[in-house]
Image (cartoon, rainbow, N blue to C red; front, top):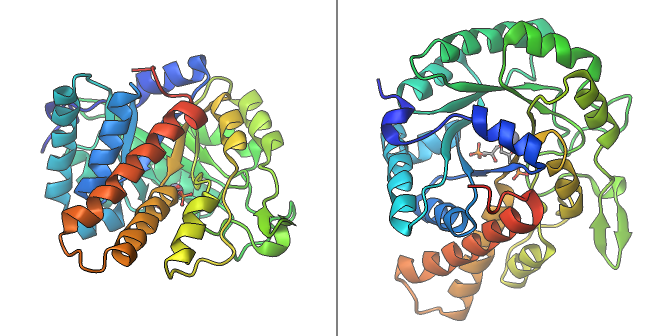
Length: 331
Ligand code: G3H
Ligand code: 13P
Ligand code: ZN
């Protein structure tokens, strides 16, 4: 059993309070390997931003749970060595079972998500409450994120009747019954690089313009649970430059479309205090790796291939912290 405090990590309680009162959101960046982690830490230290390091169950399988835990400990030491101690949270992304949440908590996570959003309401309440009871009773309080409403997938209809947007009428009851520390809601974001079907978008100069997020739902949620921390998943912007670079160097990513940065900036100023970004990092890495491999066919040193990808990732996260989330200079 390892407590997150032994690793130098923090939970989200104080960070979310400050984010809500300060009108910004914390970056929640996923990592699976060393280069991604290096880029996140360097960008967040240089911009003086607190950060949530997100690990999915897929990442744990890919990288090994012990290795990941020690990488998070290494991240704390790396930030210190870079000259500025930023608050670092180690968070389970989309935990799907009580047992997985327990395993993460026992191996040093300071925060977990239990995603019961696909279950009927009462089952979601029961599962989320069970995880909260466990996490909150640890000697060092572990924070829990729940989810209400299902993010639209490309297969779903983004129309009021058929969508699974969060129903504001449920949030108060959910938070009260579960004791959950933060809540992910569905207001039109979704996972991956193709967040809307082309027919749901307008097309300008061949570029897809997505429908706006449902800020009316967010406002209604804020009215019902004032000052409560809200989380947005599926918040990559899918930068067109990366999509075009990937396609230029042989990739195929048709109909890619993300959430415009101005809308995320607006959300970050509200009760949204955690914004999840994974796909944009994947796009940045893939674009640069394809470019390097095409332009330097004789290169076979992974450091010369992954190094430039890491530099691009750092640039991307720096931009997000300063211009999108507003988290720079908050640590
Ligand atoms: O929301 C999911 C994250 O992007 C993590 O993705 O499960 O492929 O690691 P993953
Ligand atoms: P994106 O696919 O938009 O990056 O969303 C990531 C996410 O929500 C991780 O939980
Ligand atoms: Zn997510």
